[in-house]
Image (cartoon, rainbow, N blue to C red; front, top):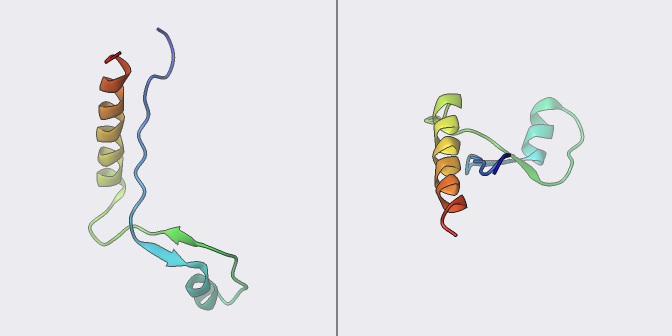
Length: 64
């Protein structure tokens, strides 16, 4: 089989509401919020977590 068999995604658990962002920037707020990396999360650790998820999903591609 040729093609993409698996992918992985990591989103930080911490959320920052758009109201707080709007107060800091001084503009109007939209709805919802944004994910924000915690003090112990950087691009490398988030990328590694996404890679682990990708590998877990990859193994499931060949189970059936």
